[in-house]
Length: 291
Picture 1 (cartoon, rainbow, N blue to C red):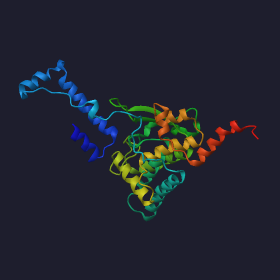
Picture 2 (cartoon, rainbow, N blue to C red):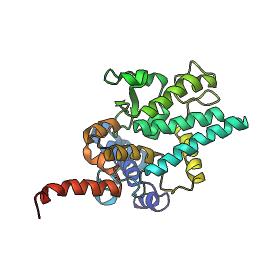
Picture 3 (tube, rainbow, N blue to C red):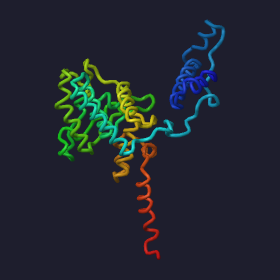
């Protein structure tokens, strides 16, 4: 158990949450084996001349000490970085169209996909599993038409539970315009009208998370942006930029599907200008009338 756990950390460099999940599976399995109600102890004695024992204990497994255990290097895009990234994605569409080379439809699809990730604060897997019918109307925002709300059916699940659903309200008109144009004018040109997926491939399949990664990394590296920017950084940017724009924190928390405000805080990395402005506002009452 000790050597295996050490290899997960030192050789495979897995995240603490992943290692804990593996260790938890071992713990549950051995608890099942040694539970007298199932009779495995006697069966093992007969077959192997010995009995099973628990091998996962508090002293040789990772404790859950904090809410977030993600990569500390991960960060959101700055507004300038994000604009460069989205502009570059659009440029690839124009270049493909002008050169009349294969892949123009896929480039348009992916440029729209990155706008949807940011526009609705989505995770990579949530995005890949979207269907066209997941968009719907929001009576409170009729200006967005049939794209006023997004039903995310495969939200991040808690351990041992099915994916969590949530409705995400549309808040960025330019993102609505982008996805509406894609659905109505570009997606039909893939030639698979009966496929439910929002993001279809040129062969009629559903775009997978790995393909999103590949395109993201190609664009990031072409722009020579930092390697610590990952697809989830776009979702981080959604939380951070809405916070800087003064959007209610509770609303943001519900939009991205966080149970607690502490989880939302982890993904918020506001700029120095925002922090200085907030500090001045906080200090203003204290110095009111001073001097």
